[in-house]
Length: 124
Image (cartoon, rainbow, N blue to C red; front, side):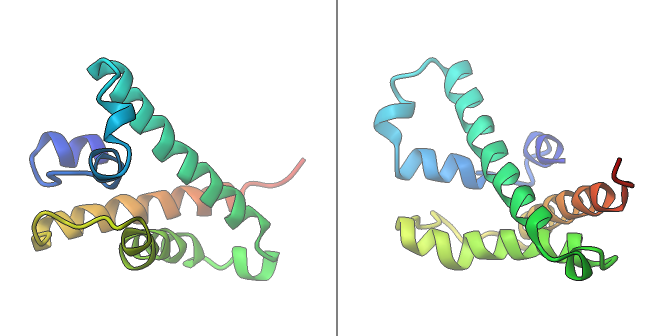
């Protein structure tokens, strides 16, 4: 979904790109473009994996709610915008237009739906 929204031009700059541009440009600029892109993807997947591990550690009655996964995905996105952006001093170069915000929200809803699907699998 992220690839679709960026290739379509809906999302101009992803949160990992913002961090790379504003917080660690000295590291990213030294890498060739394919390596820098891969590093950003891996960092974002690491953030998502940590979020998934935390979701998996929630008490079963909370985690097993049908809407908990999508809500959790939206909370992670909101936490980045409300908590992490100010902590890291990340400033949006422009206000995100509604279609871009909707695409980012949909991306995180999908993440939450995947977490829900993993939640519903029977354990062996």
